[in-house]
Length: 384
Image 1 (tube, one colour):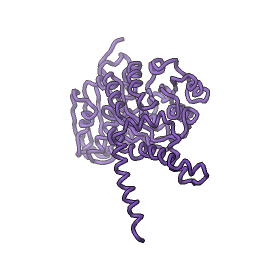
Image 2 (cartoon, helix red, strand yellow):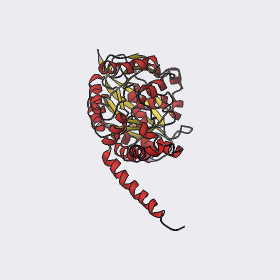
Image 3 (cartoon, rainbow, N blue to C red):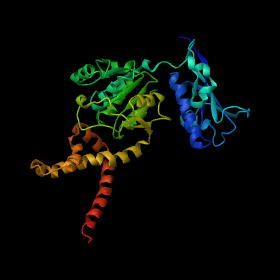
Image 4 (cartoon, one colour):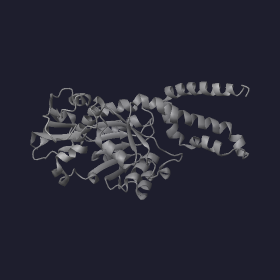
């Protein structure tokens, strides 16, 4: 196949003249250009940025450097102040190499900048229905992903589960369009590979998926604790995949595919932890189609927070269940006890894996909680 040099344009509106607004908008524009044209950062030869005169807080090129374009020549310029021109616009012309001859790159004009190219409204990007997702692990989370995407019409869903009966149940239940014989077959043609398994199994699965996936595809996990997973994703990224950590803050106390629900992620937070640069646009599109809200967060901050809001509560729920078990058997418990011990019914294979993986943060959270509880108990002795 003959390869050549090509160029593609893009533009985006910026909501305010601030460093954060300029960098966020420019990063989104560059990520969308790369994603929509199925390019790799290594394909980029150069980039020329222009900004309207009302954007002075930062150079848009800084966003390219943050995305890892460290060896790419970058040029910035300020546009002429033309009467009636749109306000706060960043434009870019990206030159790329190794493009198959005859392939037409797609310009990207986002938000208010879309008005600069009304002709593109008649030439939309490829339909999202052409996207292929491989769902590895079809338990509660993986099964719910498949069910949530069933009505979107945007994804072809290939599923794989180590338990053949689980995969067949997911197929019969409409969570996947087809099941693969093995993980490697599931990943081979996928645009996005989603790994939904206990956290202690994820590093090895990430390595296998990275070896089986084509360069440029997105690799996303769903782990509740990041130890070992972040390192595996970084290794996957070095092989040319768009690796990104992920964790949907959703779930129920059920187990396996039988507990999967199409609405599990509705209005839930889906944490995204990019390995390099911005979160892949395709990962964000998946989150939107699940009905969730993407939140980009640092992996360490994620684990510290989840220790206090999820992992320690699971440990406490189990302890309360044991302490109150005798009274509950005598029907001497009410809805408060039921609510506090609900988490104890969670799948221990899954829950104990993430609690152990995040042990140091859980222990720190326990010390903080114990100080608070001791303080409250001491106050009970005080006279009214």
